[in-house]
Length: 309
Image (cartoon, rainbow, N blue to C red; front, top):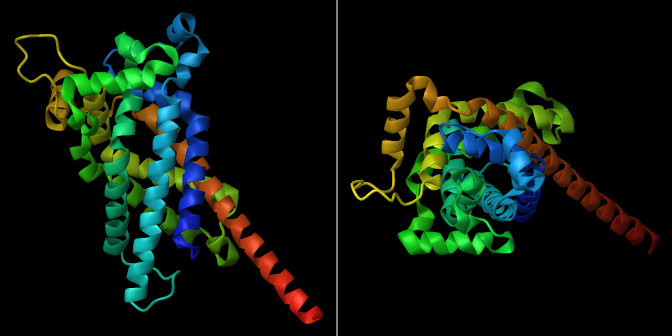
């Protein structure tokens, strides 16, 4: 993302692109989460028959809110920090930074955004897996969101909203790697004006490829985080560890199913990522192009009026 637009414009375009992609792929995201959270997976046909098509949008409100906020904070922080580093090096805004610098900026931006949106993400996972676990607190029309929040507070206190956050110290590399790879795609595959303003097709393909590589690298940790966030209080009195940790979840998945179990649901995750990240990048780039076009038209109009006078 070597855009020279102000941080606020990049943040708005990024959040709108991400939320648009989220709405488009949400049913697939819900199915992926249920596959990751339960060993037995989920039957799409059974869910439609039992709960109807509307059940594929459980938690979309919380997820859209989290996506908007997370993406806005991420892109704002990224563009702000990148501009700060570039100015410190005495370079132009569009200058290339080293790999460590790019990843560090993306990583810090990811940590900052995830630290704020983790509670919404956790509530979303609970809403997405409620029907599969027959959790009545997350079912009941408009009260589902507040029902889940009350359950988390009752069982775990306010700290429960940040359950699984420790994984973000590694998972925050995901958007950093994705953004870095997308930049490299632009520099390798595009030239001239197209590099500065990639066509929609290239934005989609570049975003999808970058996200796929990043997801494959970090998928086991992503799977463990979903398992931890979807977990509920155990009713067993003999179970001293009522809530699994990231480490115990990884060990449990590996012990039960072997190495390949650590990639349970990877196919669905990649397919979702291709659609989501590709669409998000495409929409983001298009919004930025429209902003630039509007600015150039306004400047031309002002210059024309000045000549008339």
